[in-house]
Image 1 (tube, rainbow, N blue to C red):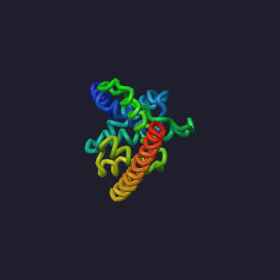
Image 2 (cartoon, rainbow, N blue to C red):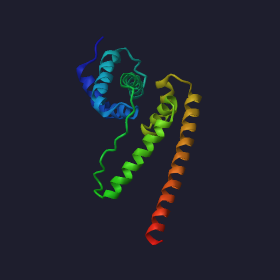
Image 3 (cartoon, helix red, strand yellow):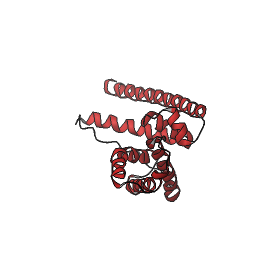
Image 4 (cartoon, helix red, strand yellow):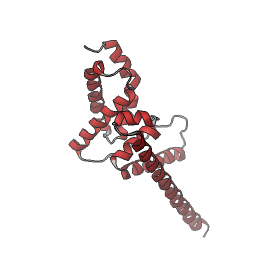
Length: 180
């Protein structure tokens, strides 16, 4: 059984951005993202006719992207920074700087997590997938998903708390120098 070309194009258009973001957040460098994206959709083209129609395609695509990202990391053996998309609503340099700082903080946080917690955090908090979807996608127990999400969220809260304290200290030092 082969995949109807119109159905393939429909799925490609519907899931292209999601798969690209997933690959980037899983550490695929921007320079390799298009090739990895193509690999994901080649797998989809080959395997989709065999998939259970009840399975969530988005979760399945994330699983394929995760496997391809893992293979890419093994090939390249290097880490990558997340890139921010430009905010078209504001041209203020301060807003751009704040976005870059926030992106760097999230990237640093993600790099501090082990692969298992990183995957569930990204799927839950960035891609908005439910715990049952994550469980099915990763093939792990639902309670394990909830546990990993809880741990990752707690670590994220702690990381953002430390960052606020650090930024407040820098701001206080700056004000003392200016008015000292």
